Length: 149
Image (cartoon, rainbow, N blue to C red; front, side):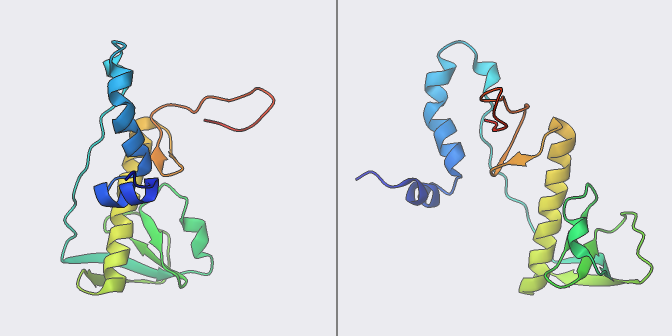
């Protein structure tokens, strides 16, 4: 039996793109260009039990989602700023998040994900495209099209 890509991804607990990279790695590395292809790594991050953040209410919380600052938003109009980050909110309060509560844990995880995203963007100069962090600029498929690979 050959599992589908979704089933294989769930069983091996890896993204489908990682599975394709690992499956084709031997074919690619036989050409002598081993240094071109990066290996896949898996890291586990321990979520802290308690984290103190700055909580502020704003009218336009969605404007903070794409920024390069360590700020995450909630489904409501709340913005959470990591400790030590500069902010320009006039009305804010310090809030201690506990990882035992599901909503607080989600906010802590989003702060960690955003911190990792910011660091990868600084190192590579590129963002995420379809769930994969790019290490180089995507190449154009055709001059007349705007699609990228």
